[in-house]
Length: 385
Image 1 (cartoon, rainbow, N blue to C red):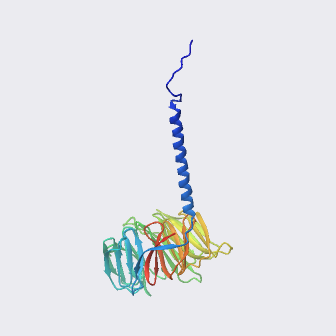
Image 2 (image 1 turned 60 degrees about the vertical axis):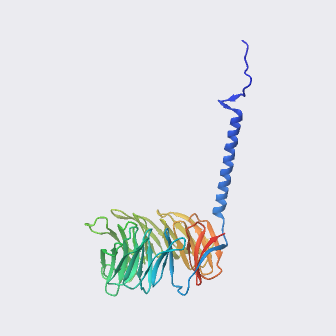
Protein backbone atom coordinates (compact mmCIF):
# COMPACT_ATOMS: atom_id res chain seq x y z
CA UNK A 1 0.00 0.00 0.00
CA UNK A 2 1.33 3.37 -0.89
CA UNK A 3 2.23 5.51 2.14
CA UNK A 4 0.72 9.00 2.11
CA UNK A 5 2.48 12.02 3.56
CA UNK A 6 0.92 15.27 4.66
CA UNK A 7 2.34 18.58 3.57
CA UNK A 8 1.87 22.09 4.86
CA UNK A 9 1.70 21.12 8.55
CA UNK A 10 4.36 20.83 11.25
CA UNK A 11 4.93 17.48 13.00
CA UNK A 12 3.18 17.13 16.40
CA UNK A 13 4.31 15.34 19.54
CA UNK A 14 1.62 14.04 21.90
CA UNK A 15 -0.84 16.52 20.50
CA UNK A 16 1.36 19.61 21.19
CA UNK A 17 3.08 21.30 18.31
CA UNK A 18 6.84 21.47 18.80
CA UNK A 19 7.27 25.24 18.60
CA UNK A 20 4.54 25.64 21.22
CA UNK A 21 6.19 23.06 23.44
CA UNK A 22 9.57 24.77 23.17
CA UNK A 23 7.94 28.08 24.04
CA UNK A 24 6.30 26.49 27.06
CA UNK A 25 9.64 25.12 28.25
CA UNK A 26 11.22 28.56 27.95
CA UNK A 27 8.41 30.09 30.02
CA UNK A 28 8.83 27.40 32.69
CA UNK A 29 12.61 27.85 32.76
CA UNK A 30 12.21 31.62 33.01
CA UNK A 31 9.78 31.18 35.89
CA UNK A 32 12.18 28.86 37.70
CA UNK A 33 15.02 31.36 37.20
CA UNK A 34 12.93 34.24 38.52
CA UNK A 35 11.86 32.16 41.54
CA UNK A 36 15.47 31.22 42.24
CA UNK A 37 16.53 34.87 42.08
CA UNK A 38 13.72 35.86 44.45
CA UNK A 39 14.72 33.12 46.90
CA UNK A 40 18.38 34.16 46.74
CA UNK A 41 17.42 37.81 47.28
CA UNK A 42 15.20 36.90 50.23
CA UNK A 43 17.95 34.71 51.71
CA UNK A 44 20.56 37.46 51.37
CA UNK A 45 18.17 40.08 52.74
CA UNK A 46 17.18 37.94 55.71
CA UNK A 47 20.82 37.30 56.61
CA UNK A 48 22.11 40.79 55.89
CA UNK A 49 23.27 42.66 58.98
CA UNK A 50 22.46 46.37 58.81
CA UNK A 51 25.00 48.61 60.56
CA UNK A 52 23.72 52.17 60.06
CA UNK A 53 20.47 54.10 59.92
CA UNK A 54 18.86 57.27 58.63
CA UNK A 55 16.45 59.50 60.55
CA UNK A 56 13.15 59.76 58.64
CA UNK A 57 11.21 61.84 61.18
CA UNK A 58 11.89 63.53 64.52
CA UNK A 59 9.88 65.22 67.26
CA UNK A 60 11.41 67.48 69.88
CA UNK A 61 10.77 66.26 73.42
CA UNK A 62 10.75 69.72 75.01
CA UNK A 63 11.44 70.26 78.68
CA UNK A 64 9.62 67.14 79.93
CA UNK A 65 11.87 64.16 79.22
CA UNK A 66 9.97 61.86 81.59
CA UNK A 67 7.47 60.87 78.87
CA UNK A 68 7.27 57.17 77.96
CA UNK A 69 6.03 55.68 74.68
CA UNK A 70 4.15 52.63 73.43
CA UNK A 71 3.31 51.79 69.79
CA UNK A 72 0.08 50.03 68.80
CA UNK A 73 -1.95 49.65 65.60
CA UNK A 74 -3.74 52.97 66.13
CA UNK A 75 -0.63 55.05 66.70
CA UNK A 76 1.67 55.85 69.60
CA UNK A 77 0.75 56.23 73.26
CA UNK A 78 2.59 59.03 75.09
CA UNK A 79 2.29 58.87 78.87
CA UNK A 80 3.88 60.49 81.89
CA UNK A 81 3.02 61.39 85.48
CA UNK A 82 0.86 64.27 84.20
CA UNK A 83 -1.23 62.62 81.49
CA UNK A 84 -1.59 60.37 78.47
CA UNK A 85 -2.34 60.86 74.77
CA UNK A 86 -2.72 58.81 71.60
CA UNK A 87 -0.94 60.19 68.52
CA UNK A 88 -1.78 58.80 65.08
CA UNK A 89 0.80 57.42 62.69
CA UNK A 90 0.54 60.71 60.83
CA UNK A 91 1.39 62.73 63.95
CA UNK A 92 -2.10 63.99 64.88
CA UNK A 93 -3.27 63.83 68.51
CA UNK A 94 -6.38 61.62 68.57
CA UNK A 95 -7.14 62.14 72.28
CA UNK A 96 -5.48 63.18 75.51
CA UNK A 97 -6.25 62.91 79.21
CA UNK A 98 -4.62 64.62 82.16
CA UNK A 99 -4.06 63.08 85.61
CA UNK A 100 -1.57 63.31 88.46
CA UNK A 101 0.47 60.19 89.24
CA UNK A 102 3.70 59.95 91.20
CA UNK A 103 5.15 56.87 89.44
CA UNK A 104 3.15 55.77 86.37
CA UNK A 105 3.30 52.10 85.32
CA UNK A 106 1.69 50.80 82.14
CA UNK A 107 0.34 47.53 80.78
CA UNK A 108 -1.11 47.07 77.30
CA UNK A 109 -3.08 44.54 75.29
CA UNK A 110 -4.24 44.71 71.68
CA UNK A 111 -7.02 47.27 72.23
CA UNK A 112 -6.53 48.52 75.79
CA UNK A 113 -3.98 50.32 77.92
CA UNK A 114 -3.98 50.68 81.70
CA UNK A 115 -1.95 53.27 83.60
CA UNK A 116 -1.56 52.93 87.36
CA UNK A 117 0.26 54.83 90.09
CA UNK A 118 2.94 52.57 91.54
CA UNK A 119 2.57 52.62 95.34
CA UNK A 120 -0.43 54.91 94.79
CA UNK A 121 -4.17 54.28 94.50
CA UNK A 122 -5.25 55.29 90.98
CA UNK A 123 -5.79 53.00 87.99
CA UNK A 124 -6.96 54.30 84.59
CA UNK A 125 -8.17 52.28 81.58
CA UNK A 126 -8.05 53.54 77.98
CA UNK A 127 -9.00 52.25 74.53
CA UNK A 128 -8.67 53.72 71.04
CA UNK A 129 -11.35 56.33 71.84
CA UNK A 130 -9.84 57.54 75.11
CA UNK A 131 -10.55 56.95 78.78
CA UNK A 132 -13.17 54.31 79.51
CA UNK A 133 -12.55 53.61 83.19
CA UNK A 134 -10.97 54.90 86.41
CA UNK A 135 -10.85 53.46 89.89
CA UNK A 136 -9.30 54.30 93.23
CA UNK A 137 -7.99 51.41 95.32
CA UNK A 138 -8.03 51.24 99.11
CA UNK A 139 -4.60 49.53 99.13
CA UNK A 140 -1.56 50.80 97.12
CA UNK A 141 -0.91 49.32 93.67
CA UNK A 142 2.10 47.03 93.22
CA UNK A 143 1.60 45.74 89.65
CA UNK A 144 -1.00 45.72 86.86
CA UNK A 145 -1.85 43.72 83.75
CA UNK A 146 -4.67 43.90 81.21
CA UNK A 147 -6.49 41.39 78.99
CA UNK A 148 -7.70 41.71 75.41
CA UNK A 149 -11.18 42.57 76.74
CA UNK A 150 -9.83 45.30 78.99
CA UNK A 151 -10.02 43.35 82.25
CA UNK A 152 -7.42 44.81 84.62
CA UNK A 153 -5.48 42.62 87.04
CA UNK A 154 -3.86 44.39 89.98
CA UNK A 155 -1.64 43.37 92.88
CA UNK A 156 -2.43 45.59 95.87
CA UNK A 157 -0.10 45.52 98.88
CA UNK A 158 0.70 47.37 102.05
CA UNK A 159 2.01 46.45 105.50
CA UNK A 160 -1.25 44.88 106.64
CA UNK A 161 -3.20 43.76 103.55
CA UNK A 162 -2.46 42.09 100.22
CA UNK A 163 -4.97 41.56 97.42
CA UNK A 164 -5.09 40.33 93.85
CA UNK A 165 -8.07 42.06 92.22
CA UNK A 166 -9.71 42.02 88.80
CA UNK A 167 -11.68 44.99 87.40
CA UNK A 168 -13.68 45.45 84.20
CA UNK A 169 -12.68 48.12 81.68
CA UNK A 170 -14.93 50.67 83.38
CA UNK A 171 -13.26 50.18 86.76
CA UNK A 172 -15.86 47.98 88.46
CA UNK A 173 -14.43 45.28 90.74
CA UNK A 174 -14.99 41.74 89.45
CA UNK A 175 -12.84 39.57 91.74
CA UNK A 176 -10.97 40.24 94.97
CA UNK A 177 -8.56 37.63 96.37
CA UNK A 178 -7.09 38.37 99.77
CA UNK A 179 -3.64 37.05 100.61
CA UNK A 180 -2.20 36.83 104.11
CA UNK A 181 1.48 36.51 104.93
CA UNK A 182 0.75 33.62 107.29
CA UNK A 183 -1.41 31.49 104.98
CA UNK A 184 -0.55 32.50 101.41
CA UNK A 185 2.51 34.71 101.30
CA UNK A 186 3.47 38.08 99.82
CA UNK A 187 2.32 38.51 96.18
CA UNK A 188 5.29 38.84 93.82
CA UNK A 189 3.95 38.54 90.29
CA UNK A 190 0.88 37.58 88.30
CA UNK A 191 0.02 36.45 84.81
CA UNK A 192 -3.40 36.63 83.18
CA UNK A 193 -4.63 34.83 80.07
CA UNK A 194 -5.67 37.03 77.14
CA UNK A 195 -9.35 36.20 77.75
CA UNK A 196 -9.02 36.91 81.52
CA UNK A 197 -10.39 33.46 82.41
CA UNK A 198 -7.15 32.15 83.90
CA UNK A 199 -4.85 33.77 86.44
CA UNK A 200 -1.58 32.65 88.03
CA UNK A 201 -0.03 34.43 91.02
CA UNK A 202 3.29 33.80 92.76
CA UNK A 203 3.54 34.50 96.51
CA UNK A 204 6.75 34.74 98.49
CA UNK A 205 6.52 32.39 101.45
CA UNK A 206 7.87 33.95 104.63
CA UNK A 207 9.68 31.79 107.17
CA UNK A 208 10.95 28.23 107.15
CA UNK A 209 14.64 29.11 106.83
CA UNK A 210 14.65 28.95 102.99
CA UNK A 211 13.20 31.03 100.17
CA UNK A 212 10.10 29.46 98.65
CA UNK A 213 7.35 30.61 96.31
CA UNK A 214 3.75 29.49 96.37
CA UNK A 215 2.19 29.60 92.88
CA UNK A 216 -1.61 29.61 92.85
CA UNK A 217 -3.70 29.07 89.71
CA UNK A 218 -7.22 30.49 89.41
CA UNK A 219 -9.97 29.80 86.87
CA UNK A 220 -12.86 32.25 86.48
CA UNK A 221 -14.66 30.41 83.67
CA UNK A 222 -17.41 29.32 86.07
CA UNK A 223 -18.63 32.29 88.09
CA UNK A 224 -20.43 29.98 90.54
CA UNK A 225 -17.60 27.53 91.14
CA UNK A 226 -14.42 27.73 93.21
CA UNK A 227 -11.80 29.89 91.54
CA UNK A 228 -8.62 28.36 92.97
CA UNK A 229 -7.80 25.20 91.03
CA UNK A 230 -4.21 24.40 91.99
CA UNK A 231 -1.33 25.35 94.22
CA UNK A 232 2.39 24.63 93.78
CA UNK A 233 5.18 25.21 96.31
CA UNK A 234 8.50 25.85 94.56
CA UNK A 235 12.00 26.46 95.87
CA UNK A 236 13.49 29.92 95.26
CA UNK A 237 11.88 33.05 93.83
CA UNK A 238 9.44 33.14 90.91
CA UNK A 239 9.58 36.82 89.91
CA UNK A 240 7.72 36.67 86.57
CA UNK A 241 4.65 34.88 85.18
CA UNK A 242 3.13 34.99 81.70
CA UNK A 243 0.57 33.12 79.63
CA UNK A 244 1.85 31.74 76.33
CA UNK A 245 -1.71 31.06 75.15
CA UNK A 246 -5.13 30.55 76.72
CA UNK A 247 -4.15 27.26 78.35
CA UNK A 248 -0.38 27.50 78.99
CA UNK A 249 1.30 29.51 81.73
CA UNK A 250 5.04 29.93 82.21
CA UNK A 251 6.56 30.45 85.64
CA UNK A 252 10.05 31.93 85.52
CA UNK A 253 12.30 30.68 88.31
CA UNK A 254 15.75 31.76 89.44
CA UNK A 255 17.34 28.80 87.66
CA UNK A 256 15.00 28.25 84.73
CA UNK A 257 11.30 28.05 84.00
CA UNK A 258 8.32 25.71 84.12
CA UNK A 259 5.46 25.57 81.58
CA UNK A 260 2.11 24.51 83.03
CA UNK A 261 -0.99 23.31 81.23
CA UNK A 262 -3.87 25.21 82.82
CA UNK A 263 -7.10 23.51 81.82
CA UNK A 264 -9.61 21.69 83.97
CA UNK A 265 -6.60 20.75 86.07
CA UNK A 266 -3.03 22.03 86.24
CA UNK A 267 -0.07 19.90 85.15
CA UNK A 268 3.58 20.43 84.28
CA UNK A 269 4.25 20.29 80.54
CA UNK A 270 7.94 21.21 80.52
CA UNK A 271 10.58 22.11 83.06
CA UNK A 272 13.84 23.74 81.98
CA UNK A 273 16.77 24.07 84.39
CA UNK A 274 19.72 26.36 83.63
CA UNK A 275 23.21 25.84 85.01
CA UNK A 276 24.40 29.30 83.94
CA UNK A 277 23.24 32.50 85.62
CA UNK A 278 20.12 34.03 84.10
CA UNK A 279 20.55 37.72 83.35
CA UNK A 280 17.12 38.50 81.83
CA UNK A 281 13.88 36.76 80.82
CA UNK A 282 11.02 37.75 78.53
CA UNK A 283 7.97 36.33 76.78
CA UNK A 284 6.32 37.53 73.56
CA UNK A 285 4.28 36.02 70.76
CA UNK A 286 4.03 32.67 72.51
CA UNK A 287 7.82 32.39 72.75
CA UNK A 288 10.11 32.35 75.76
CA UNK A 289 13.43 34.15 75.93
CA UNK A 290 16.38 33.75 78.30
CA UNK A 291 19.61 35.73 78.32
CA UNK A 292 22.29 33.91 80.29
CA UNK A 293 25.85 34.74 81.22
CA UNK A 294 27.90 32.56 78.93
CA UNK A 295 31.05 30.89 80.31
CA UNK A 296 32.45 30.06 76.87
CA UNK A 297 34.38 32.14 74.35
CA UNK A 298 31.46 32.69 71.94
CA UNK A 299 30.30 35.81 73.81
CA UNK A 300 29.58 37.20 77.27
CA UNK A 301 25.86 36.48 76.93
CA UNK A 302 23.85 33.67 75.38
CA UNK A 303 20.38 34.34 74.01
CA UNK A 304 18.06 31.31 73.95
CA UNK A 305 14.57 31.28 72.45
CA UNK A 306 12.08 28.52 73.27
CA UNK A 307 8.71 27.75 71.70
CA UNK A 308 5.53 27.33 73.76
CA UNK A 309 6.30 23.64 74.18
CA UNK A 310 9.64 24.47 75.83
CA UNK A 311 11.87 23.40 72.93
CA UNK A 312 14.90 25.50 71.99
CA UNK A 313 14.34 27.27 68.67
CA UNK A 314 17.50 29.33 68.46
CA UNK A 315 20.70 30.28 70.27
CA UNK A 316 22.80 33.40 69.68
CA UNK A 317 25.81 34.93 71.42
CA UNK A 318 26.73 38.55 72.07
CA UNK A 319 29.22 40.70 73.93
CA UNK A 320 26.85 43.66 74.06
CA UNK A 321 26.56 45.01 77.59
CA UNK A 322 22.85 45.65 77.10
CA UNK A 323 20.78 47.78 79.46
CA UNK A 324 17.25 47.10 78.18
CA UNK A 325 15.35 44.50 76.15
CA UNK A 326 12.35 44.97 73.88
CA UNK A 327 10.66 41.85 72.51
CA UNK A 328 7.55 41.57 70.34
CA UNK A 329 6.09 38.93 68.02
CA UNK A 330 8.82 39.42 65.38
CA UNK A 331 12.15 40.30 66.94
CA UNK A 332 14.25 41.03 70.01
CA UNK A 333 16.06 44.33 70.58
CA UNK A 334 19.03 44.56 72.96
CA UNK A 335 20.41 48.03 73.54
CA UNK A 336 22.30 50.40 75.79
CA UNK A 337 22.90 54.14 75.47
CA UNK A 338 25.43 53.80 72.64
CA UNK A 339 24.69 50.53 70.82
CA UNK A 340 21.91 48.18 69.74
CA UNK A 341 21.44 44.71 68.29
CA UNK A 342 18.23 43.40 66.71
CA UNK A 343 17.68 39.64 66.37
CA UNK A 344 15.00 37.79 64.44
CA UNK A 345 13.45 34.78 66.15
CA UNK A 346 15.16 32.63 63.53
CA UNK A 347 18.45 33.56 65.20
CA UNK A 348 19.73 35.88 62.45
CA UNK A 349 21.18 39.23 63.47
CA UNK A 350 19.28 41.96 61.61
CA UNK A 351 20.95 45.13 62.94
CA UNK A 352 24.08 46.00 64.91
CA UNK A 353 24.89 49.68 65.09
CA UNK A 354 25.78 52.64 67.28
CA UNK A 355 23.87 55.84 68.03
CA UNK A 356 24.88 59.45 67.51
CA UNK A 357 23.39 60.48 70.88
CA UNK A 358 22.81 58.61 74.13
CA UNK A 359 19.60 56.56 73.77
CA UNK A 360 17.16 55.82 76.59
CA UNK A 361 14.64 53.78 74.56
CA UNK A 362 14.28 51.80 71.33
CA UNK A 363 11.24 49.98 69.93
CA UNK A 364 9.83 49.05 66.48
CA UNK A 365 7.80 51.45 64.37
CA UNK A 366 4.92 50.35 62.11
CA UNK A 367 6.92 49.59 58.95
CA UNK A 368 9.41 46.70 58.76
CA UNK A 369 12.96 47.94 59.18
CA UNK A 370 11.96 51.13 60.97
CA UNK A 371 12.33 51.89 64.68
CA UNK A 372 11.85 54.66 67.21
CA UNK A 373 14.76 55.77 69.35
CA UNK A 374 14.45 58.09 72.33
CA UNK A 375 17.19 60.46 73.44
CA UNK A 376 17.26 63.54 75.68
CA UNK A 377 16.46 65.88 72.79
CA UNK A 378 14.02 64.06 70.52
CA UNK A 379 11.91 61.08 69.60
CA UNK A 380 13.33 59.91 66.25
CA UNK A 381 12.01 57.43 63.73
CA UNK A 382 14.86 55.68 61.94
CA UNK A 383 15.24 53.28 59.02
CA UNK A 384 18.11 50.80 59.21
CA UNK A 385 20.36 50.43 56.17
